[in-house]
Length: 117
Image 1 (spheres, rainbow, N blue to C red):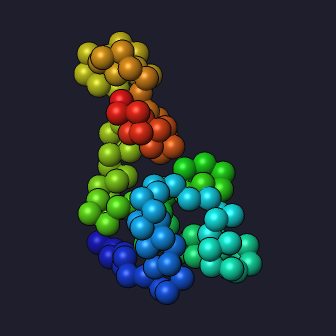
Image 2 (cartoon, one colour):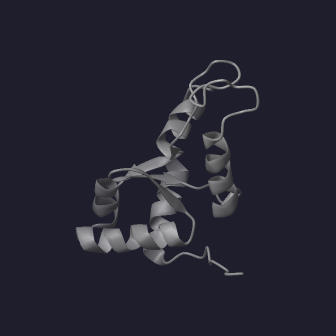
């Protein structure tokens, strides 16, 4: 069993705390570059580290989702995986039992949560 540390460096904590303070669930690479006033390569290093530690998850090109501390990476990823499975009795894997569109990616789950789907 491998243990992944969720402790943060000063730059990583600035990113996570800023997102938490503003109540934002998504952040763009450009925002991290501007916030930390670092080069794109340095921002990429922070992003990779936050992803490895389970604080961020890739949404789509240049966009990342914050994984709340109470969820942790394993729980968040298991919920994402569960959302990709077809519910029992659903004839179409892209729709739920109630006929609503199924969320198949992290960004779709974020959007679905925003609209209370």
